[in-house]
Image 1 (tube, rainbow, N blue to C red):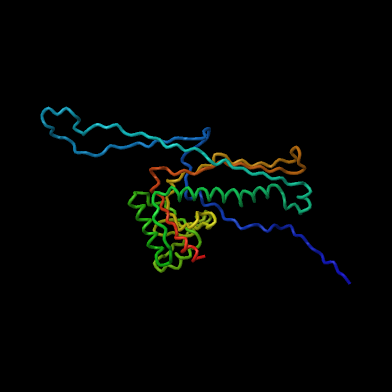
Image 2: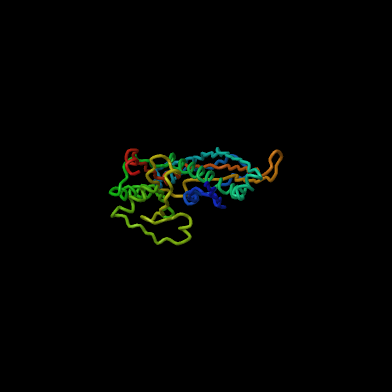
Length: 286
């Protein structure tokens, strides 16, 4: 006797794991692109110090303060390059016959969470690593040397007179594991709830530690110590729409557009220290 067993479909979607963006901790929004596609900012020079001529020789006709120079005033231009979009349709019957698991609102939220946010994060981290003011040669990061390398980064920022407060240490999971195994590192994990919600997991040598999935970071990423003053990461436009029954579609049409970029200020590039891992060493840890 044949028996047809019942198959039941539950109103549940097996969502992909996603990580909240930590970009806001590493970047700033100091400039506005409202009403413009490009902006320019000034870089103003200074005058060298010299000795004051208290008792100039007879016939002296110059300034006792020294030779007069004009100050340099050059500009940096930042033009938004990324104008990205997406679109998809959801048929009314498809939504109805999947227990409404294709609802436009949840589908849009999923698109932003799984596609938009990772793309913007990856782009921003890539720009920061590429334009870092200090990029030592790639090396194998281990539990034996990770603390020394972090201290080297901190020392480099100190000598560049980067503000000591507000520094962020970005590490992928494998490097964070090496940090936890290092006997010399004592991670301060007594972090307030407000910081934990933003993705902060510890403090080390005065820097805030955040862990970012390797998939969002450049290949062979080791760690990055940075101050948020260095990177301006504007989102000029973030526009998401759900059209119900537009011409030609019985259902919902979802559209989205985001205009964003990331820029490193030339005089603040030294506030980013990027240490890459040797490719062979990274493969050995995976």
